[in-house]
Image (cartoon, rainbow, N blue to C red; front, side):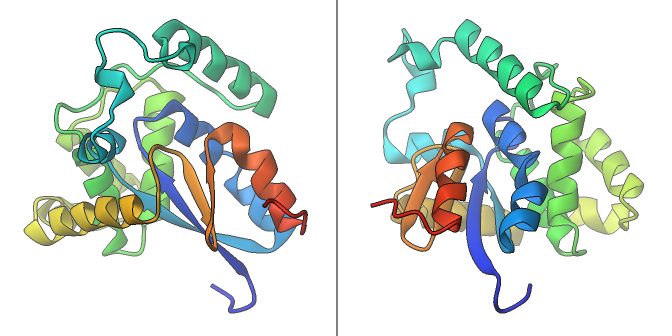
Length: 206
């Protein structure tokens, strides 16, 4: 990463529609504004559980924005607007930490962002139901040492790193994904990327 590039921390959830949609715009924003995104994958449900306020576990949606039908339709509209493929995931792993741990394990071979992007494509473009076997296949497709990757996936050090990422996010005020931290400014949601870009252009955001 060039020293003169503005750094943006990107907290994302691999099973999050809006994290996927936001991720499709990262390369464009980096090219347009000369910035660099630092990807930080985590299990957003565990983040919300740890904060003590998980709207997805309420008996009834806490607001219309958490209604499943609305969110599915909204995601399809955003995908059409961006011109990217979108489908609802065929299924997510029972262990919510598996996907972010896979990305962190791939980071040991310099492929965290590539793994994040591959998982997003599998879930939201190809409709693949992901498990450990599929993750191994993805690793091989990315040119990684799949045996080493699978060993790292189950290493306690990876689980600890993921746990610390959640703690870091909470300390910084992150309450959901995707969240972008530009210095001490926090932008939550795919729909706030327009404000993030405004801030990158120098528009006062306070």
